[in-house]
Image (cartoon, helix red, strand yellow):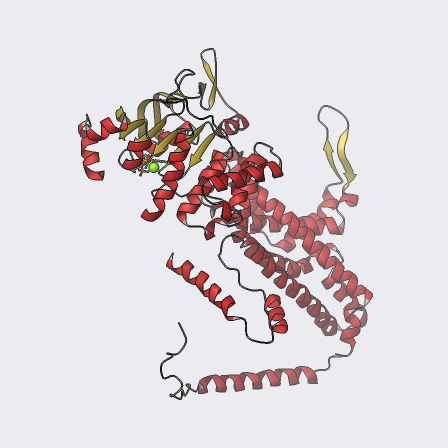
Length: 321
Length: 267
Ligand SMILES: Nc1ncnc2c1ncn2[C@@H]1O[C@H](COP(=O)(O)OP(=O)(O)OP(=O)(O)O)[C@@H](O)[C@H]1O
Ligand SMILES: [Mg+2]
């Protein structure tokens, strides 16, 4: 398709267009980058201390805290998101209103405010308990101070907030699945719940997964706000070091590196998870970068001709259909 | 599967009809879509429904397996009221599980196939036997393979729907419905979304099914199929049954003007 015409191609010399503008832009940008790096290098920052901070105990503890709170809060958010999305699609007006109210409140107030509300709740509420009706017994009974640990406050603050966003994402996924799928599932005798679990949600995943990946990457960063509940995560670790050593820039650079590592790993994971859920939706999944690398490493010559020709055949039949 | 038909006549009316509709009414909001349908489909019979767009054919079919709720009248499948239980002179709505159990005994094939795109052909077929009936995976897989073989797709068990042609998808959809060993099969324009050269394969499968003694209600515009395979041809228009009769009679000698007008357009 994009190949030059075969006839007489070897006799003609092709002179490609010279893109002068691109060269100029590249040179200017590289120069600016150089100036920025030079400026940073000249600044009185103790770069040599950063590698030590990177694996210091305090920072590693904070790193672990960030991972734990991000994963648990995101998990809570996903579970709540699925529940509230299904509630919003319910036929019962009370159920839909409650779901709407939840989303309205938790999406409409800043996370930091929600975190502080949970954190401060123990000042006003002294016990949390779930009484068993008509008895004097409790299913759950604990003093608020024991219940609302920094972790709990951070989990509720971040998780409930995330649930509101996830509810909208999951809802968009569910309504993206054709009505015919539900009918087919019901017609073979599935219940509504089975239909949701086995037929609708797996297909909705294709729409749900990409924004959820972004949500998780956001969560890795937003979890720094959990420091206001005195929960021990990266940002709080950085603050505790810098307040002792009075070197904020070095510690902030240190945790920035860790945040970049975490978000990069999450980005790669997102890529593979998206591939997994694209199953059945496209005829030919493209190779992953690793597969491509492996193929290039282990095949010294160009890929065999029959191989490529079957690929084109599949692609062509896909187009003509 | 179903026992082979008794020699000669396919109809077996000894045990009462498989489907019986008495004055079935259905409305969507203010529009009345079914205005009193009376029909009977005997065991092992094939009834073909014909009629202009919007006449209520799909709606009637969907009422039979309770995908739509009937507003008035009675609808019986295999002698049992659809969607309700009668006690004295009161009707009690069935619970979701009970409705699902009854739907499991009725197969349905859709115009747009509605295969589950995230499952292979075989998984589409084994899903309900395993999840709904609780059959073992091994048992369901064996039968699923046999069913795909039967619809001519024995070599496509591991293929996803997006990699199958429309005709192949529809045959998988038929196999999926058959996997539940239904006593009744509903077809809603099963070949309307297919390229002309793919229609034949699907109709062949349906013809074979009819020969094996399956009770079928088929909404179709395939006049040839209706003539050869159908025991009854029903012409519907504007929510009423205009004409019922053996296909050859209705097609060659339509009694009603509306039937004549419609047939002159499609024949
Ligand atoms: N869920 C619904 N809500 C509102 N109106 C509906 C609904 N389903 C069907 N209708 C209306 O009911 C009428 C009959 O629809 P139905 O699908 O039964 O027709 P049909 O005979 O199957 O037509 P076609 O040949 O086009 O499939 C149409 O006017 C349609 O617009
Ligand atoms: Mg229809």
